[in-house]
Length: 126
Image (cartoon, rainbow, N blue to C red; front, side, top):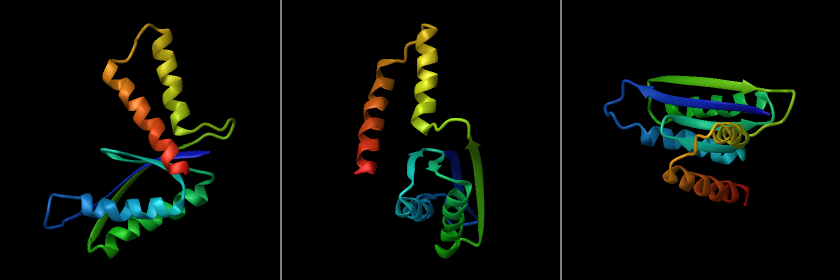
């Protein structure tokens, strides 16, 4: 399982707003049927292989040019673990369990994130 975080942005546009461009990239990710979650600073994607990941990232990158960008900046972080299969949620759960075992409970409002994450996972699997 390959887990990646990607952030792609147009440079030199006439506006400081990027959401229209980001929406174009997210449409590509949605159509790929890969598991993903959007964060304020990028999108985390799970793929079965690097090839599948790179194919989607390239399409996202190119979508910003099609949307009118003259220059595109893309940052990609990859976690390619091959000894065991882990999802992005497994990684978060592992950290939360370690924090709990060390006596560090999350604030109550963080628990709301867990239920939203679970609801979102169910939604994208449907």
